[in-house]
Length: 193
Length: 208
Image (cartoon, rainbow over all chains, first blue to last red; front, side):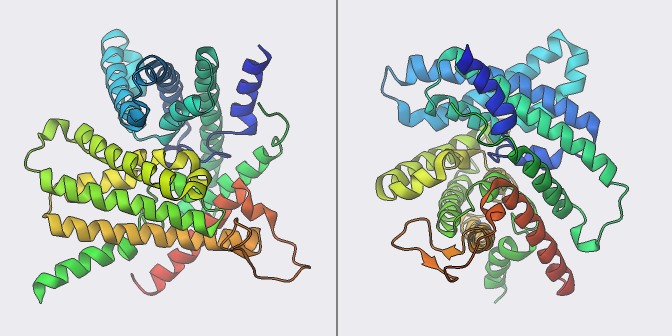
């Protein structure tokens, strides 16, 4: 229990996936312009990341390891994630059209979100148990959402600010992310597994 | 003359006009994640370049056999195969670099720069042009990683060619106090943001 709680705390705050480990930078820079899209993307990521960790962990432990196929890890994981995203998309469209409307456009983008792949790979590398792996997936995705939503809030206000020409666009976004990351650095060393 | 011009254009486009890092902001995770040391940055750049060139050539040669509806999964499998090969090569011949790059080596597979080139260029153009394009974009990516990691290592550690103690060159005297911020995660964001601002000015001034 203690270990599970520390996984949650570590991957939301101490080793935030975006601001400390640099996973999922593309969506972090790409969809953080508006709060609405940031929230939509976050929900889609929480959903897919949790499921992806579960499925890849089961596949790795019960198929790849028993048959000595560890070298197929990368190919298997990326295929699982790509098909999982498709599956989620199709099921959502049937079951809950409203939710699909909200998440729909973000789902295809998630396939190349490296945070998802990173969670799957790290869950195996850190030798987590099944429960720990799923908790890790949830915590990592919540950390991602936290960073994305904070960033969207800042960028909405930054829109009004007058900037030097050279800093406009991505440059100021990255520097803002740096300052945000600096704030999260305050948590570093508080807890480790 | 005109023939060779196409190749020169293909090569230079990836380096300046469509530089994946400074211009398009593609594949940013490894750019920020492994650039605390120059060696790691260049190693990452070369590994990604190797995958990019190989996948570009294979996609270009198979483009007539890949059905349009399933092209993205096919590209992903091709890329994943080459990433697996590169991972094994690094693990066998460069174990120190492999450990330093960590999970970012298998993550080359989700680097949108590589998938982007496969989809936007290699799946439409001849093999030789795709090869040249892969080399150009690869050089652009490696160059950007090299510049960022050089800045971060010099400011953050005061050394070049670390972290192996026998290769490390200390640039400044004993009294030098490095700016630790640039070795830490926030420094990566800030250094890249400032580099982007500088390259924006340069590109604008010389109309590149």
